[in-house]
Amino acid sequence: MAAVQTSRQRLANRLAIAAVIVVTLIFLAPIYWIGSTAFKPRALATTVPPTVLFQPEITPFIKLFTKRVQLTRPVEEEVYEAAPWWERRIYDGGERVLRVGDSVQLSGYPDRFKNSLIVAVTSTLLAVSMGTLTAYGFSRFRVPGEQDWLFFILSTRMLPPVVVAIPMFLMYRAVGMTDTHIGLIILYTAFNLSFSVWLMKGFIDEIPKEYEEAALVDGYTRMQAFFKIVLPEATTGIAATAVFCFITAWNEYAFALMLTNRDAQTAPPFIPAQVGSGLTDWTAIAAGTFLFLLPVAIFTFLLRNHLLRGMSFGAIRK
Image (cartoon, rainbow, N blue to C red):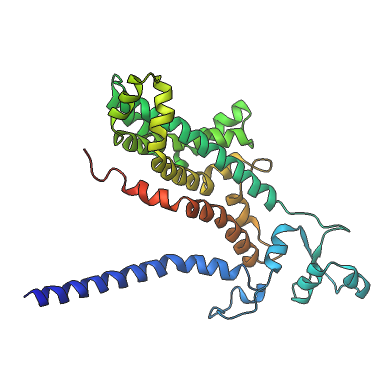
C-alpha cells in the first residue's frame, strides 16, 4: 500500500513539474519572440515560417535611436564612403535608409525612456512612502470608520482607467497639467496609493506591537519607534509593494497616451509609433520593447529575495 502511494506521489510530482515547465515556456515564448526580433534583419522579421536561426544584427537599435529618412534613389559612392559605419551597415542590409542631414540626430526614444524612468520611480517612491505611513496609522491606531475608509481607498481601483480617462483629461486640461511630468506622477501615485495602503497594512499587522511598546518604554518617540523598529521589520513588504507599484506605473499606457504628447510622453505610447517608412518596422518596435523590459526585469531581479519573502509574509497569523 505504501509503495502504491509512493509511486502515485512520484507520478503526481512529475506531472506537476511538467505542467510548470509547459506554463513557463508559454509565458517565456513572447519574451523570446521580442528578444529575437530585436536582433533580426528587417527582411526576416515577418517570414513564414518564422526564422529561428539567423545572424544577429544591431541595425534595429540604430534605427530606434536615430532619426531616419527613406532613400529614394541609389546613394552616391562618395556619400556612402563618408557615412558612418552604422549607416553603411543599414544600407548594405538593403533598407536604403540613411540619417537625416549632415549629423546624427537622436530619435524621440531616449527622451521617452527617460520620462518613463522619472515618472515611474518618483510615483513609486511617493506611493510606497505615503502608503506605508497610512497603513501604519490604520494598523496601530483606532480610526473612526476604519473599514469604511479602507473600502473607500480600495474603491479607487475598482474602475478601469479608460472609464475615468476622459474626465481626467478634461480636468488636467483645465488646470494646464497635460503633457507634464508632475501630472503623470500625481495620477500614478493616486492610483497606486490604494494598492500600497492595503498591501502594507497586511504586512504591518503582522509585526507585533510589543516591539514598539518596548521601544516606547525605553524612551523612543512614536516616530523613532516607527523608523527604527517598524520599517526594518517591514522591509520585505516595502520591497514587494515597490515592485508592483513600479511595474504598474512603468507599463501604464492609457493615461500616458491621452494626457501626454511630446514633452512628458513615456515609452509605452511612443514605441508603437515606430512604423518606419511605408511598412511597420517590427524590428525597431521589438528593439524598443526589449530595452523597455530591462529596467523592470533588473529591478525585480534585485528585489527577488524580498519579493518571495514578502509574498509569503503573513501566511501564518498570530
